[in-house]
Image (cartoon, rainbow, N blue to C red; front, side, top):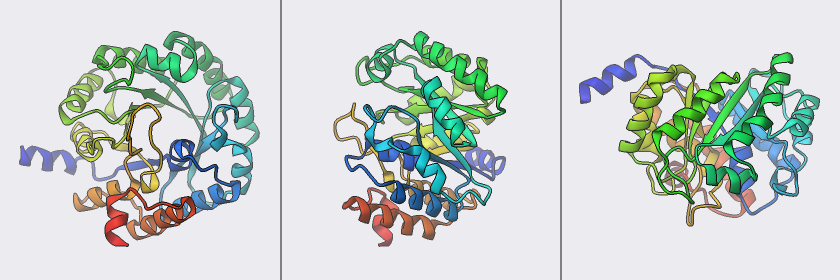
Length: 305
């Protein structure tokens, strides 16, 4: 097995990280952060070498107050470099706001669990695609790339087990409507190596793994092993969050997304290139933790400070 792993990693010397802390991380924090802080955080993350960053989401502040004034964040961030700045867009109202902010890329989302879709977005999976399709059409007209998210690919807080077939149906549909990449989300962090292996094996039969990303939460400490499993299947895009920002309101004790600096430490030890500075990430993690008034969840940041 060791030899097979080494050969696998030699075929994929570079990995791209999608930093989701300013959006998926902060929207699950109890503190409503200022626009200035969010912009400073994004600028620091860009300086670390992260070339894809989720700035925020254009959703109703009634439902997600942490993402209020995302358009102002876009106005404040430094866009002189090569970083791609992404916004989550739930519908055409959000898409209109995203266009005014001149986003580089948008993300749309749905779920593999019917109950989760109903509880999270107040619509069925089928209805979620009705909301997404006009967004996709406008994005295509404006030549804006679209990334798709699938929640609950390895388990649901309401339904429990989620079958591989449920995930594949949604993945095929997202690619079918024009997403260039689909991120598979273990929303409540219940996935294990076996489940990840089974899912990646099935997904790779229907789409190229070059267009698949993984998004693991670390509720049970399984995010890094699951990422390693995805890498073995040829995945080269990983979602992560600075300092392990975030959490999951649907899973008691959920510790949020896998920390970006923990992922970078692991990849560096494997000889996988990312172009991201670990030292700068740790400094940024401490910057966030100090603002939020709590220690970083990241093991690496805790060890190095």
